[in-house]
Image (cartoon, rainbow, N blue to C red; front, top):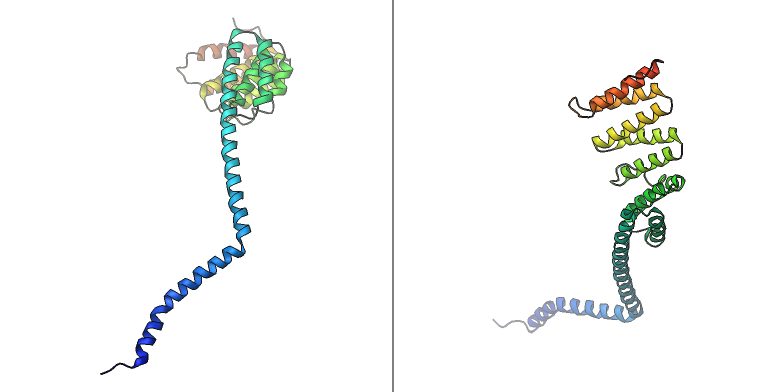
Length: 236
């Protein structure tokens, strides 16, 4: 039977619809791009500038870090030579240029050590007092020991003991706890507080193992402090 003449036309129209939709979308996109060409160009340029700035910043940071580490390595030799005044001067100059780099904490400790060795505990205190509060930082505990030593060197015994006790309460390693308590007990005994020294030595003995080779020494110091606390002569 012959097909109706319009049937083929209807079929062709139906088959053409998806293509028409695609063409319309392409034309619409093209028209939008023409209307917004300035925005597109600005967007592309902005993205390129931001990427370039990021790459430049990262490269500059790498160069800065390398320079900082190279110069600090040279200053370490000055520190090891024992010339505290020269080391302090060089480290001050270094900190002014590279104080924001990742090796600045090490440089700060070296500078604090140089101040102490140069007989300037007040400057060491000013440098370290705000930088060693978080004992979870690997370099904070050595810095806190240095700060306590600076307090002791500047005749601020109470602050030195306070800092040593803070270390003992937060240091991650047993040897650091032991060293801090031993120093706190020593200072209390030297400054006429034998009762406080006994308390610290008791805490230290509790923290030490029975087989610790230093236990006998601490027991003798504890006995001396206890004798002074009772008003008796120190144990011989």
